[in-house]
Image (cartoon, rainbow, N blue to C red; front, side, top):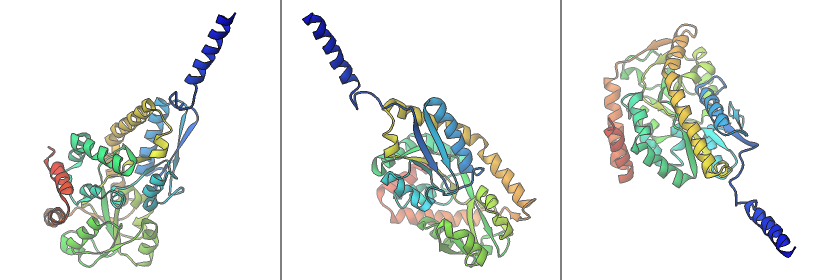
Length: 333
């Protein structure tokens, strides 16, 4: 009898060890993840979020991904710090709004740093991108789940059509609070004014600024075409908008579940990139036809020359780590 009881209580003790908090991977059941983003549900941000939701919920049964559009949770200017504090789970943030928190990101913001979208994707998917991601995540405690597509910021204004760089002269342009972007528009001859995104629509309506550049879907969804009649396809900045995750939300998942979360991100990248360029061209046609904007596609030689001067100036003034990254990006074939 003593042996039977001994075995019984030994079994209970073993079960107790197995079910002690921390002894088993955390279950994914009933985990809710909120994704904050500034765009509308039908914006590029919304499309990417919907794809990630589909992939994450399929690979991780029990997880619910809730898109939170239209800056309803947090503004894009505040989202990165909120993730570091753990008050926001995930967010889509434009690369230039990440730079204040991780200055190496400005290498991706430099004008015309990518020769074309395919070059950008090769950078992200290469050892250069993987090294960057490891360093970024280690230093910021924020994870990159989806690199996103390489789109472009299209330039709109209320003053005149842009056919040459001389046409940019003196136009008051709203820019994000990013030094690379300020330097670029100054090099183009414009008069850049740094403004938070939330202040941009009223500033454009009142004439405090006369133009700006945004991802193409924002120009459509915010109806900037009703205010600014001129659209120039310069493709000067890559509109690279990764999906990021806070350390707090990543820690809700076991190591194996985190692998699946990253796999959901990889699949999202794969799907999202396929249609992004076509959607952009479709919106540009809408802006020209239904939106009534005068669309120009300036010859880029002058803009490229000015942009390369900006790149060289930044290389001269930044440290060895920044210079190395830019040279690596340039070197990816």
